Figure (cartoon, rainbow, N blue to C red):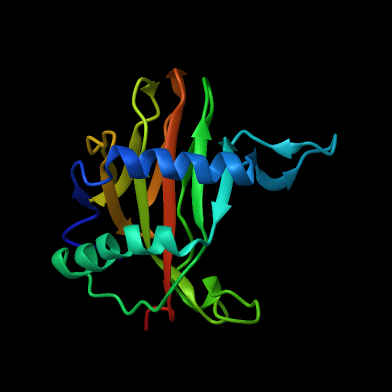
Length: 196
């Protein structure tokens, strides 16, 4: 699908006290390896596509903080996608050489729908949110690969500490490798029925 806006950026909207609180949530619940659930012949997790440490939370605090950005972006970017549910929020930690290679956050058609029981069933990821909650690192840029006539174009929005970016979940993106320091980010996915 094509869209006029491939992302919507909010500058300096997550304040320091919230950034600290988010990191405390993650520390309290603990981080686990964020590699894909794809094991190699030695039984090891595949970290060539994704290599990070992640923690999840469904605390209402996160939804109160982040949902307004999803709703504002959905309206202001002209997407106006029908959305009605959110997954657990992910806090990610990227250390030197860690990354998340090119990927989409999910299929938006009926083949990409969750088959689980409960509130996810029959829904797809429609909008994704990422917030940078740290500074003092090099690398780790959020990049988008979008169609441009007969080839792809790479977009590199300037995502700084406290910024929030929202984009359609079908847009291909990556978190480039960290070359120095540690990057912390928050991600959230907004669900709805598949596009028709």
